[in-house]
Amino acid sequence: MDIEGLVAILAALVGLPWIILHYVTKWRAAPKITEEDERMLDEMYNLARRLEDRLNTVERIVAADNPDWKPGLNAPQTPTQYQINRNPNFDRSN
Image (tube, rainbow, N blue to C red; front, top):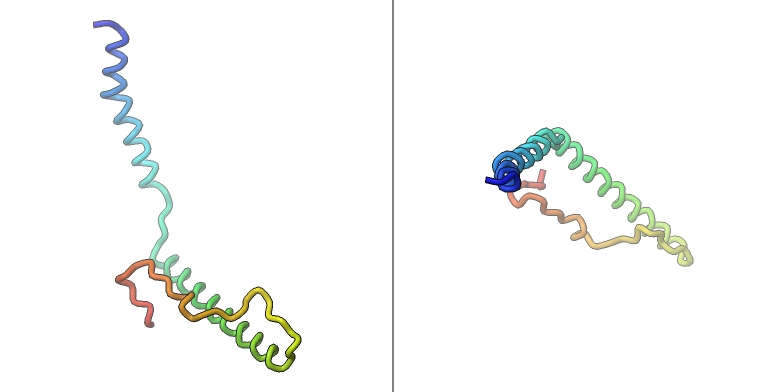
């Protein structure tokens, strides 16, 4: 058997599994989002949505009082913009 064949066999039997296992280990060691982080993101999302609703209400009031006033970038949008379904089993009703 020549040296090139031996190198090819070693690369296939040792090198390939070593590379795969190396990246599997890196993937498992990567930080993951915790349930607490998920709750915090949901709270921040709900807070941002409420603040945007308040801002839209203020803009509607100002627009009603001042016909020449034009709303900013946050013009009122339809309520369906808030329907985000990341997990179909997750209940957002509470």
